[in-house]
Amino acid sequence: MFRDVIIARRRINDDYRHYYPRVFALLLLLVLPLACSEQTEAAVEAEIQQSEPAVITTVAVPVRVMEVQSDGGEQLLRFAGVARPRQRATLSFQVGGSIETRVAQIGHLVEENEIVARLYNPQLEPAMAAAAARLEQLRSDAEQAERDLARLEQLFERGLLASQDVEQQRTALKSVRAAIDNARANLAQTRQLSEESELRAPFSGRIEQVLLEPGEFAQPGQPVLRMSAVDGLEVEVQVPPRFLRDIALGDSLTVWNGLSDEQFTGLITEIGEGSSGGTALYPLVVSLQETGLRSGEALEVGVPRREDSALHIPLNAVMRSAQGLTVFKVTDDDRAQRVAVNVKRITGDQVQLEPGSLQAGDRVVYAGLTRLADGDRVTVLTNSENNSGGSDREPGQ
Image (cartoon, rainbow, N blue to C red; front, side):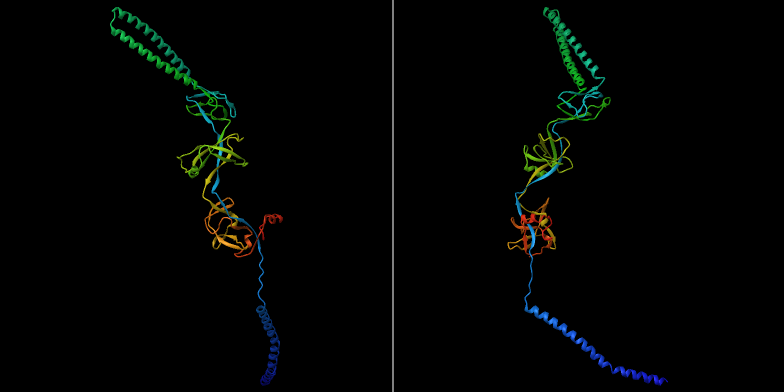
């Protein structure tokens, strides 16, 4: 039985072997046309490329340019300050005591020499009275000494009195007269101290601040009131010393209002020649006239700074690349040329350049940089073309 099975398998395998050459021939007939068609297409494409020259289409990139500017090297740098009255004072008593009355209030207008406060000191009036009484007593003593001297001189002329007695009386009279001068000075001093109990305005102005109220005790020299003149303002700014060599007293400077940017003209009245504090800045005081400003408003003073001629380009024209900071310069044949630059200083939207490959009058691209490459052809847009599109986007974007 097993033998019959083995013989049957051998017969089946022999039958399949007869079909192998036929299957192989059929597959070969199917693959051969595909290979021939691919080789034919590749050959045709190669022949076309060899027979026809390559055509490259170059489209000019629209850009906006600006010429490199060369200025005279004078800049106005702004320094911040606060408006303050030109004439101001802090009032205080020269004697101690309690404040009896305060006439002036905050915001009141006072005239020169007007009383603004009074001080009570129980020692002032008695001291002045005592000084006056002492002076009156010495004057009486002097009159008596003069009469005594006259009688002694008569006796001396008759030979009834020695000259020594006359000389002693004259010396006593001189001592009394000296005491009178001393008493007169003491009375003047006490009178002045009594007058110091009244605080008077040194000039016409407005009360800005009240530091002590009636009933409070004021030490000698302690601030009581602050006042300032109505007309005339000034502003003080701190500037580096190198800026002071280009200005002088009486020069005009431009002053801006810090909020409205309104411009005024001020005159230099004070220039600091040193700085004793912990800063390297020097004070500069500028006076203002008829500006309509009020004390305490924020101001900015423009101080000129003179430098050598320098090249300036827009900040948008500078771009960072693998070679460093570069710009695209437009050549005479309207091609973009990448040029390396060295930036010296950035001021607002302008860049000051170190001397290099750019010159005054060269055209640099400041808009449309994103689609540019070195050597690309560009189209420079004019102002009319910029405005006709009605869009602020960069050209080519």
